[in-house]
Image (cartoon, rainbow, N blue to C red):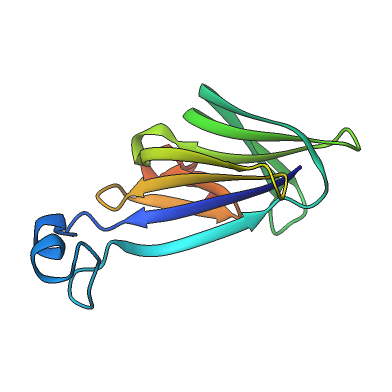
Length: 143
């Protein structure tokens, strides 16, 4: 199956009542619903998709001196895609920055779309594609 992860930053100042009254419920130039949006299409055929709540994410990478780092990020929701070739692709979101999620399955195209809505009132760090961490949980050594 094809999996698309869509991440949207919800504008905390969006006024739905104003949009309903003046713009048929839609956002307008001075009343924007989403501040930004990222979309990721998982590369390869996804055999299974699952959401793991209340988890810990392993933030791994290389420092400028080519030494490796590995930090545990607590209180995250992980979207995990197991691919046909046996590899796993993960997307991670600190729970405190999440406003909600939605899942849409399109049987005709064998596509799953997963939407993650983030709160604009919380500061976050986006150290790599598909990873959104509450700023206070981001390792200070990497700043």
